Length: 441
Image 1 (cartoon, one colour):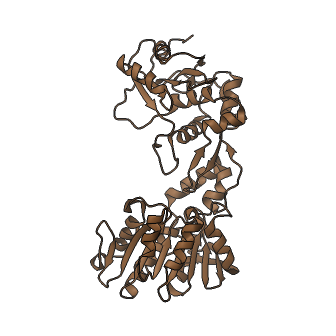
Image 2 (cartoon, helix red, strand yellow):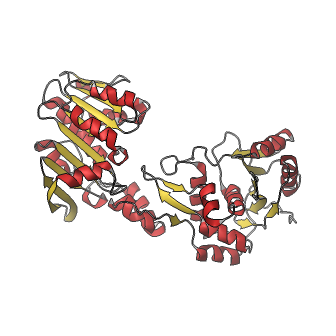
Image 3 (cartoon, one colour):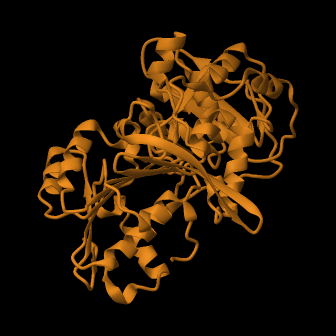
């Protein structure tokens, strides 16, 4: 057995079944264990074709190639494999093939593979019904097996429907190691084996993930069931910040210690407002709100907020017409930073875009900051909603969705986000310390 083998996955190695399913929350070691099993399977017999697939794969970097390669190394079998960038090949003529299922060309590529012995579909919750309908008959070698792993997203996902159609019985299973019980659920049915396993079924659950789990439990409990317990997502989106949290911030008093930073949310069109604000450390000063002003006027108001100090960070919403403001400030020698709401997040594993990351970073520090009294700012902060995407990342509803629901643009909230957001850039100037802030008014 490989090192750190989780007992729940023993049927994947020792039993035959056309369908094998592994699903559950984060920390259940699904991908790690399946990769270990498939490396062993590739060496059991000659000429095994193992297809590793997922809904979207634009390059082999999007696949489990790196994971399979790492498992070969951890099992001390590098002498048995060649691992060029286009595939993985064993000395017994077995091979790992990496393909996506997203479009017709990709699906035809899968159909053309002869004699697939095993297929592993990672992130199976993302696989569409047409892709699944293509995959099942394409894996047609004698005694071939289809393996699926996923964190459940919606009951209606095709892989869930396939799994539920095959179940005939389920049993709770327990493994005891060093006096500690590790639990999972095992399913049996029509030529199928399935397991649901969470972090508490994995004897090798790492301490780093335990820290993340407890943080989610304590601070994002509404997401906990989906992320860590493998529950399907609620159809309802959740509010990001509570009203009481905002109220507390508006009566809190903090010291004027830290960086001075300025945010500027630029009006796009219609009744949108341009909003400019500044902070020193965790102390936020009242915002200025403008209607129907030009990008040049907006830039000049930003200069006023900086009191002529060109070293201060001025973070400008570049999503719409804000690029003109950023350019004007840069031409004038100011330390302007353009932020596009749709740009990549600093941490793309947790957030699909910058605006989602900005909201949750603000939420994480709301217990420290001081906000000015403003009913409109409070409303905009507590009304924004979010969901979880199929990669388990938190995403914030779009500004257009918010406007349709609430009747106005969340300009004041968006400006506040900019004051605290730090996109990854090459050069930054640090003004932290005891710089005196000129009251801006």
